[in-house]
Image (cartoon, rainbow over the protein chains, first blue to last red):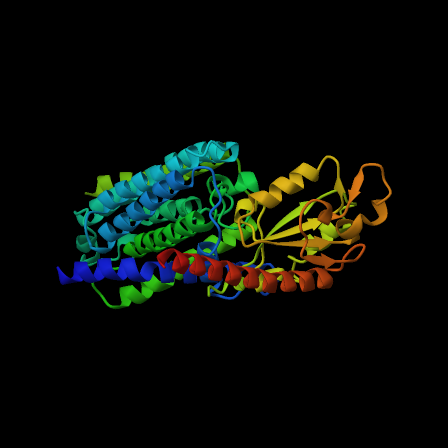
Length: 289
Length: 153
């Protein structure tokens, strides 16, 4: 019980800091890859601090703020379910509900950039949901439980049984973290109107809330990746840290080398990858039971 | 006092120019000059921008656009006119459609001359704009605190 409380408290308090640092690391590494010096590591925190100091200008700011606060709350709630060691499938469903509120945020403004981006956001959700839910199913088949605490207390490293699910999940991380080539609804880096998508009509405090919610999401996603590796031994935590950093670096590398694709291509490639990697893994798991 | 100067976000708009200053402005974001070291981000969204970087002159068509962009930006904001065309109308000043520099429509704070303005000069102008941005932000906070205290009395 005390572990659950510690897990939840650590997530609520530390996830924004970790997420912001990862964001700064992302910008620094991307800059170095491009031959530049790059901003300081704490730049995302400076950005959020500045955003809170800006005047609020907007047509329906209070409705947008209400949707964004709901998005943030549900995101935090989803992460809390996960880090408390509870049902992983439930946390994925709460995450989907959170994404729905992001869709609402974009739709209520009436701006054409937001409307297009909102449709694209729905298509994105449809694209990555199968891989995420299949990953949960894979965990159940390998460990016999949907509970995160049960999964990490097993005696084997999950990824040996679930390599296909891991590959599919890392593939959709590009979509979830809003990186090229799959940043169709909004992009992680600064861009012009249509590419900015759902965040085009967000300014000042709303954009700060959105950024912090994204930090919570990144920590949750990387925790999910770590779940493929962590078991009861102490060395699995070290291995998990290495795997998380390697996956994050891979995402930055893909982001810097690939150009954005049309949403149709994103959908086809992702579903093909999900079917091939996660689907085959699922078949194998079902056959060897 | 929030230290906002560490995160200045730019909005770049080109009025009626030859695009030379635009290319030099974009060059500021490339490896040799790298304005992102200062936290500068070229955002295309006026709602998210702090510094309005305007190149090129004002003509009868883009006059209302520039006004609208300036009004869409939230306070505190700074305007930087880059290049001679944005400062005074430059080489196109005598054309029938050119009204003049950016200060014909919006209040300009920093003038960066040059034809085309060099990236070093543009970055120098941005740094000065960033200091002005911090100053305006502090004044804005002071005013808000003053209004809150005044309301309580």
